[in-house]
Image (cartoon, rainbow, N blue to C red; front, side):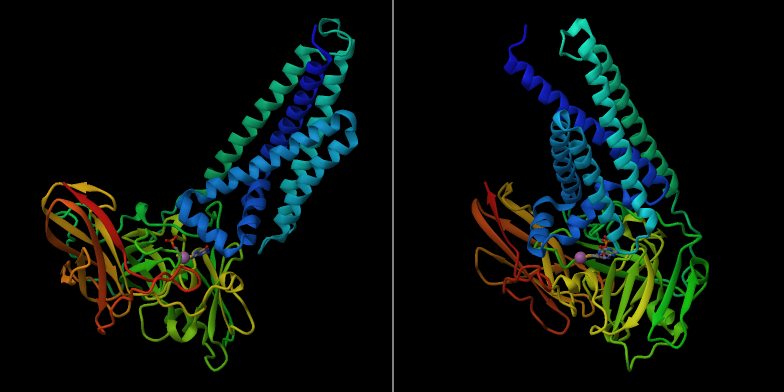
Length: 513
Ligand SMILES: Nc1nc2c(c(=O)[nH]1)N[C@H]1C(S)=C(S)[C@@H](COP(=O)(O)O)O[C@H]1N2
Ligand SMILES: [Mo]
């Protein structure tokens, strides 16, 4: 015999579980439908993406700082937890008021549907996954109630208990269906993604042979060229867009003489250049990881724009749009001042990885990525800052954002302990556009001592450096400072990444024993 209290609690729990299970089934069905229609319209992703866009900039900065690349997984997880809690509530409510419980479930899906169609670049089809979620989840919950209710005639559980067998079969069947639909959705998505193996042209203007970096001789220093699969990734996307290169196009419109649309084939048939350029994210903290050096293959941006004929008396920005409608604006005069601004189609000898913008992205040396490096680019609109605002401009980030002179200590690691004697202090420094002239190291607040520089690649590329230190036992502070080829010294004034990039010197503490 169960006490009334226990029975009550068990009933509540059981109905909460019905709500959760029905919702999971709905989400799995929606995910599958999204996989074959619009992957980004999958309810959890649609809600998650909207949360990203609505998150106040300081909170977003904090998340990137605290969680790094795990920020997206944590976001999706949090959204899921909240949704499932509401689903549990719906299940409990439905026990006594079925219609109200079902309405909550439908309402949850409705929110996801509205958010999906409100996303930039979305169409009516984006509503479909949410409709499927609503129908499947509500039907499942309704059905579970029928099964649960039938039991009152089953003598095995007492007069008001449900048939255990029926409930186990029903819930087990639904759970299996959810797993199957989820797995199928994943498979469809990866199948649709296909490969990125496109035929790349041989550069009309190739880069010289790449020098050997210091990393072989001094382990711990960042490799002179970042391996493609280790390149940092920063974007607003929860999933990587699936772009079909055969149907992909790049359109140049706005204040132009004639609108032009190029296919990937047409773009790669133009004259191409190969350039070594270091990309940096504005969100990079002093000493942070969001910087990478690669060899880019691309078409000079000026040549691409010239196809359309730009009216520079009117336009002052290039508003780039990606395949999902996300926008990035780039100052037109900076992009066309003679620097190696590119529409890149290759990276380190291969195509762009999906994460880094396949099939094409913009790269502008000397500008932070958020005002230049539009990935999955599909449109460049010549316009004015008055007329159009890009994604981060709307969020109060700077519009003119040149990369600041920076330097980073890669080895030794902060708070590490080393043996007394010779220690190599080393790292990288960058001042894209001008180039690095000098790097100095300061130990325990003493005078700055010149470090030795690694090989010069280009002025748009970072420079490795090292200093051989004869370390004595004790606690020590090591600071680094770079000077560019114009003689400008890296500032020691501390600034946060928002709104135009961090500044200040990195100083680490190490123990020597
Ligand atoms: N479409 C799109 N392009 C984008 C972004 C984005 O969120 N969406 N993020 C930008 C930012 S902030 C940076 S720093 C660079 C990062 O490029 P990576 O991920 O290849 O390192 O891409 C830029 N291009
Ligand atoms: Mo960035």
